[in-house]
Amino acid sequence: MRQPLLAFLLLLAAPVWAQVSPIIDRTDMPAVTAAAPVDTMRISRAAPTLPPSAPPLSRRGANQTWNYGALVATAQAVDRYVAVSATFPIYQLSFGVLGGVNRATVASPEPLPAGLGGTLPITDPYQFYNVSAATAPAQDYRSVGFGGTLNGFQVPVTYRSQAEQDVIYRFPLSFASAPDSSVSFLETPAAAAATGYFNRRRKRVNTVDAWGTLTTPFGTFQTVRVVSKLIDRDSIALGGMPGFGIAVPVTREYKWLAKTHHVPLLTITTQMLGGVETITAVQYRDIYRRIVLAARPTANLPELTVFPNPVATGQSTHLSGLGSGLKATVTATDLAGRMLFEQTLAVTQGACTIPADAFGAFRGVALLTVQTAQGVAVRRVVRQK
Image (cartoon, rainbow, N blue to C red; front, side, top):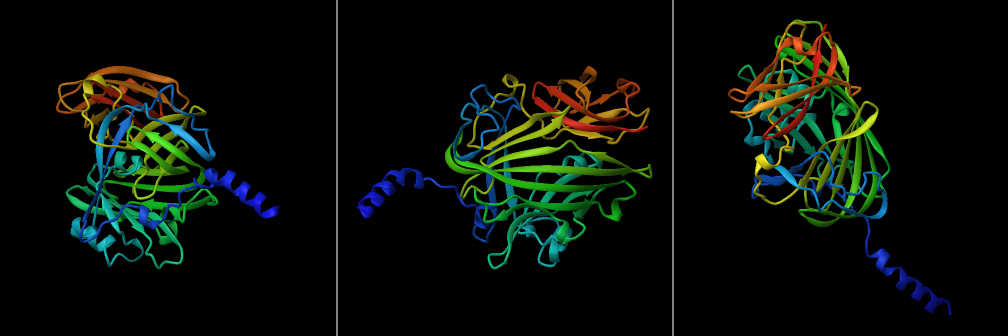
């Protein structure tokens, strides 16, 4: 009787066993080859306010169902990954075959980290990533550095050591994975000191807290969810001025990963603002969609730059990357959520200026919410004494 009973129990369990957590490995990360020198994925951005039908971020555990099909694209971009050999020669020296511990397997022309990109007048940014070799005893996907053009020169920015690089994922990654962490230290080179200095200490804690079926406008997939908790502290100094440290609000990235897709199918980013976990960005993999920006004022403004940052007493704050012929509504709050001011400014040739006296006597870290007919973005600005 035992064998028929066991067979019957296995038959009942079969539908459950048929669905298991995906196992993400090195082959599921961005990659380029001689036959495919560019790896591209279209990404849609949605408003940072989730639709009423969206499931809560607290939904975790095995065999979950997340339906984010009601997300509406408000902007689109293409994530593009290329070979290091396709970048500037100085980057090939720093991150190519001679890069040593900084060697990258792919480069991506994407914005720099918020603090670095908003502090120094850097253009043509690149980020460099490394996927461990198939023969490596421990495999991961990590950031090995950044690059950008500063005062007409390409400047590579690396981590202080291999042990202090930002490890984004460790493989294999599945619902059975234990939490892992890394502590990284990034700093600008001495060559940039005359213009400014920036460093970031980061602790990343990755926790796989769920797996299940994810639905977005792109489709329905079996996924595993990773929650990355980022604890950053920035140090900044500009043009000979005394430097100071900034404790960045705790950030969490909720990322749904699936086999063969190379980037998360959905990423929801939050920050702790005024003691409340607040959604600051939503993006997902998608197909091309025609978007009428004027009808969707909550689109992101990925090119928005704030400078100088930090800004000293008596200095105006300048915004660029806004488009032309627009008006911008700028709302400033402190980290506790208290409003400092709200102004509507004229935009000329994609830029506008916040007068120095708009902040009054406020000193410290402020959040600027900038909204135009093309979208909305949030940037951090530091007011020095």
